Image (cartoon, rainbow, N blue to C red; front, side, top):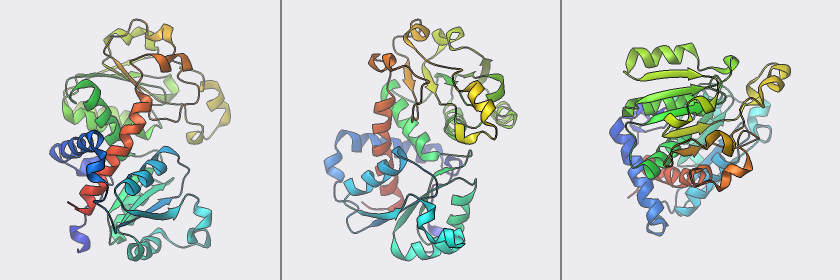
Length: 309
């Protein structure tokens, strides 16, 4: 296959709504009958190139490939790779292309997976690049919403916490807007509001109501989906600013008592303290099921990119 014909996943902006729905539907099929897909990637090798720490994303990709009958190789610390010696990402991926059939990359610098895709002879999956994008988390979120809400359209979506630096939030908003979201309710401290550039993009491109508030309790009755995020210490330049804001939003049963019975509470994880453990027992809390959905949608993505039957 020539480089021009290789399909990557760098951003969901490169995928049509139909292609996204195909991935979601295949993820649901795998979820319902995983044994049917146990050998479809036999003989294939996936490289996991994690230049930044990860638990769920890395493990779920590795589990996905193993459950499909494939094999894995890779690293979870850039200090164990030749990058520490000064090797460029372009040269790294040129060589990895000879050893693997598909590669998953997480990198702290925005745009690095895109750069890698230019030089790669195999499909590249962006597993998160800095504060920019996290498309496979968005696919995980979409599969969760589709599974619990019966579809992706006409929802009131509340997003709470770090809306400024949260790449999961940015990816989800951009993609959900394409599926006729009724309203986005943005809940954050003033210091962590959604970037103005993203708000302008939404206003210029879609006819979606956007509401900004400071407190969950003020809007909980409106929401079909409440998407919580942590205040990310690693995205702050100043620890004093982080310490001031880290306990701003802690979700508990009191704050969600007036929420709809069919509302779902999501979180990309890891959780620090922004959701009290008492909420785990609420039937509306689906964040651990959400993590499980990540496995199935990544299995679907690997199948599609490798073009296996």
